[in-house]
Length: 151
Length: 413
Image 1 (tube, chains in turn orange, green):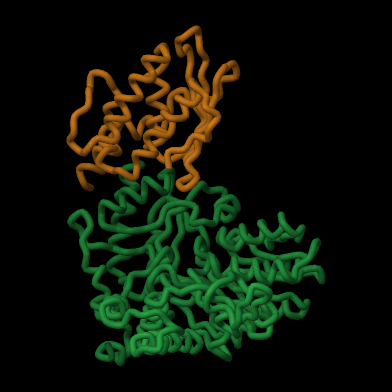
Image 2 (cartoon, one colour):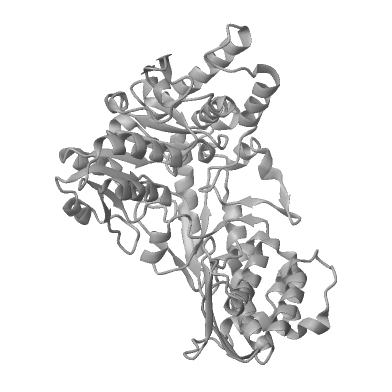
């Protein structure tokens, strides 16, 4: 097995894929959005419960590949208790990490455990998988009415 | 080429030498190209034909009174004749050049469907159609109020012929069916389908995109009214395809697009149309593509389509046995009569994760819904991984695929 495959599908990602966190509907959510990549079939719904400007609870449902599901799961774990602004800043950094040139820099202190997804940048075709849930979350927080897709 | 072709046993290693791309490496690994249902690689002769055309022979056809144009016209016509022979059509006037299978089907829907199908007429398709044989009919349904009916398939991905017969009522005026399913590999009993449909007076189109490069096709023996295929799945260039249509039908159909080449005379008051096949070929066609397709057909004929079919059936048998030994692997599409396509799901691994892991081993496969979403819905899977073979594939490549799938199992254990 090649090193980049080992890095991409490391244990934490496979764990989040197998046992996704916050993987359920939120009946009292005040914001939801759906993201769908028709070519690969990845399809997620993100639920957000706000308290003022803070994300009090966040969950997701749906189906997709290991990368998209693990990313969605890790995202929900990372965003609970964050403000909208903090969520936006985090996504910006995650986006930078996913789409950088392989080996390029990103701020590991800002992304925390999400650094597990850093290996995705070696697989340009899979960046859309890792970022789908994040764009869906953004649409839930700031609805534009547009269909969310990263393809 | 004759060197290997005379040998009794098929020598894939020998034909591989004719395909320069098969020598490429991916991530430092030899390329294992198993996405032939999406597009096939091109033999050197096809590449040379196109290069030669643009470097030495390029001119527009049917126009110039000069040497080059006359030669280009001659080669263009000769390619049409090659297609006619390849499909065993009665006349080369029945061979129309289009962009591909999708355009061929759209042409039939636009020109035959809009002219001859009325409100409440029924069109019968099957559950295993490619989107290109579903969506154009839905567009006609929305415009004209025809009814679209779908014949079901069983768990092996075979057409339920008894159900098909029940759906084939007197109201069915058109039957449009895939010859070989791109998502399942199923070979449909198309001759029987044509016979049944004609008994009811329905017109029949066969989508031959996945058939022509893998099995002999004789449109007169099949009896179909239309037959569509793409050049690029037959070792030819992209952007060129063929619609075969029976002359009586093509003659009564209105033209597809208006423009140059498809007319006889034009005044602002009235235009008279050119004869077949030009009536359906407005504008300067893909001349290099047509000539390249002709060379691709020459190549296929030099290898022999029967030999290709029997070798690919051996590959299918070998691949099926090997894949079924992988724990957790489930084949989607287990028809008794199949083309060399292995569509499968593997445990909890998503098709795209499988695709990525295989890619790093240099193995090119397709992961997704294969433009046949209703097939995915029928088997209740979001996507499948599909390995599709050509006659230049080898058992060794199947062994590489199997080894890489064990790696997938390791990652997803």
